[in-house]
Length: 341
Image (cartoon, rainbow, N blue to C red; front, top):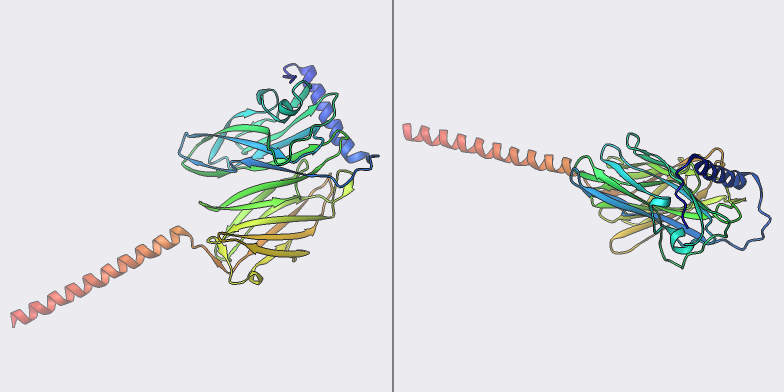
């Protein structure tokens, strides 16, 4: 039974619940002797939208492989020059979310975030169960957390990114979360990032870049070394890169730096179309003060920028035409002199 918190009293209760859960997570150790916890995955579908001006698209945030999910929170970010968010479906307005499916008779307390189209941001939204244990999903089955409708301001494409992802169990303990993030280096060439370094309030993946001059791409991610009442000393990223975007002769040609230093380990594999770079590093920062890791990945060859290639081709075409016209003029003058003599 989902409660739509329309009055101030209920909103205040929901806010207090979320605050207390977050506070308990940071302040008090768990007395449970848990086995190795499962790792949830949270992702957006589709992660990139493309269309013409005024066209609308729906995107949905999913979670899968979670155990004892009692509270979840998340937000969303995008490029505000490209799209506006027109509608947010969350809590009472999303009638088939994870708790509706797995705990349909249990009351929930939702706290919806605000849409800020100036910043390109949906602030932290959260939903918690009331008076019940958490829910566990079927293996590899995706369950909805949030849905949003976007409207294009201009023709083009826009990447969407998760923020503030936070999954808590019935012991108020933050669970392990892998985040899937995409960014479009060149349209039609998405780069996929899978990492366990975010997944706590005030953490995200941002600052994506693609540097054709230096044959590099990269991004920043927020890192903490403490969550779920345990130190998570080591983090990882698995980055999937299209062969035709950035490539090498051999796997040893790849370079990866994290805040200017080499990762603790790096392994590279590939299939017919993509490279997969998996690397580990040490987490830094705390829950109260997350720190930023700057990831840079370098290859040996890179896709040329289309505008530059097009301009060069156009220039060569004009140059060839000029040469031909010049030859034709000189030839005409020469024939005229012969005829005159």
